[in-house]
Amino acid sequence: FFLIGRVWQARSWGAFVAGALLVPPVFLLARIREYMVALLIVAVVAALARRYAADSCVLISTDKAVNPTSVMGVSKRIAELVFLGEAGARGTRFRVVRLGNVLSSNGSVVPLFQQQIAERRPLTVTDTEATRYFITVGEAAQLVLAAALPQMAGELFLLDMHDPVRILDLAHALMDMA
Image (cartoon, rainbow, N blue to C red; front, side):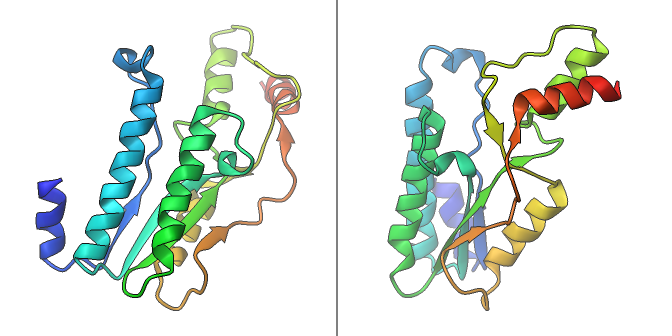
């Protein structure tokens, strides 16, 4: 964290905190610890942004933080609360951006389904009733950058992601297109 502080001493205008977690094999049995470390990083970045008077600090969160049902959703919601708690003070503008499933990103189910189709394997749908909101990479980038602008009001930014899509319906549509 010393290095982050050194970067901010050069008068950085802001920071973006993603905190998306890919699970390395070493963490498979200790996933809770991994999320705790991610939350600690979020808290430290928020503290450093305040300490070095960054103009803006944006947390990139997920729609899974709304009424969370998973450890990831709960950890994202806690990270949001850390940022929103900082937002009331003067100085650094703390903002939270909530994104849906970003199409073609590492965390999206679409590339996984496409790979399974290409390899002629069955598609992995763990919950036939599960739904997700989908957005494009461009939409996600625009929302994240807009949240950092000084003229934007508010602390929590959401994109109109329209209606959620059932993962099972998406799997069928991708199979039909293949």
